[in-house]
Length: 519
Ligand SMILES: O=C(O)CC[C@@H](O)C(=O)O
Ligand SMILES: [Zn+2]
Image (cartoon, rainbow, N blue to C red; front, side, top):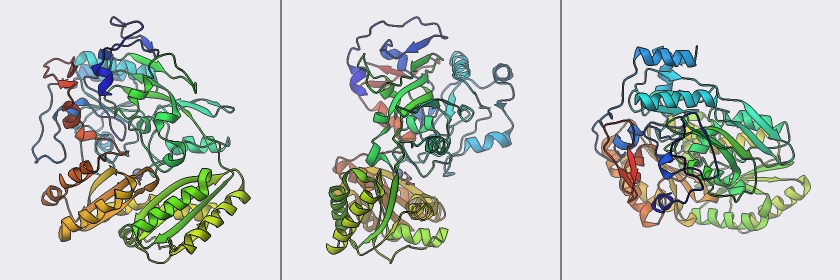
């Protein structure tokens, strides 16, 4: 992204004087200045206000309440306007606003007094235009399932919920292209598609609540990325409302389109810093005719990696997921969720999924692979599921680790990308580094994507433990050229990262206009 703003962007037609009601189309008719979002920024649930971007200190900083930017306060007049455009959908009852102020992990809490629930893009545009002119901060919010504290307000930002924007707009049964509003819940989209012999190209543990707009805004990865790739590949079009209320229409449904810059890519994973996603078109794969899930045990992480190599070679095109969890995860699943281990106790567990179009062919391949894996002693135990209820049960051993952790204590979460052969070393080193200062140190994640979820618990929030974890974890990751956010987003960490890049200079502005200035 930095490069784009550093270069002089050649525009086909600059739109400097657009009326705020305009809809912009995607063919590169924007100036870089159009992307400055003075008060929008988003994160995992879906989005947050830029007050967070400029003021909240990185998680590693010593405690100290950051200052609120000089945004206006919501007045009775503002409320009257919102009630006029959103009758019955302007929520001010503190009991009803409360749950939107708190994140899923219950670790961060805002103090917003207003929750707006638009149903259409036009309403989002009206809200943002009004707030832009009134200098009111806005915190857009999707399913509020994010894990990095980015989906709730920092202060009293107005919460703009996309929950009522939940219509499927079109589905093309030949191409498999789905177009829907941003607030559609991922699981509802999956069910809709499955009835039509298709599936969503992404699947997350949070599917029952997370929304597609938030998924795209955070470039969520999940369990199917190994097979279908990231949202940068499967999202074909987006409709976005910019901070001043203008609508950017990039809602294409084309597989190929070389008529200019691919602007929608900027919004995928931008965590709302550039606008609010209101609609998405996405390419969906056909529903596999046969699915198998295998749960295996390994003695060492090296053997687990050898199993991964073997698996890729022998299962090839039918491999759709390769996930892992360690014995500490299994202990938490047993203790807190009463989920029994489906195989004998091992230091590491693997969940492999195959999806294909010919059940006989798939099970033949799987049998060959399992025979080889056992013969080569890479795996020591395992079980296979072909029927739906058992498949679900095996998947829950992996999908419910996050939930088990919430019962173990206060959780410090890290979502690390590393060269795959390094991922477990970080867990081992962290355990050694922390000794008995942590309650549990667990590792699990997406082996196929080189993505480790390192989680550390303590009986309660513990600043001394945090100081021992950070910057150790960041330095360790940096030393391997890894990334400290593989798929969850940055949220609170944005300010130090974004503003330390040479092309982003935060401009201390006393007006509502620009808080970021490019050079
Ligand atoms: O809780 C976590 O750290 C990971 C959550 C999610 O990304 C997963 O893969 O289960
Ligand atoms: Zn994950």
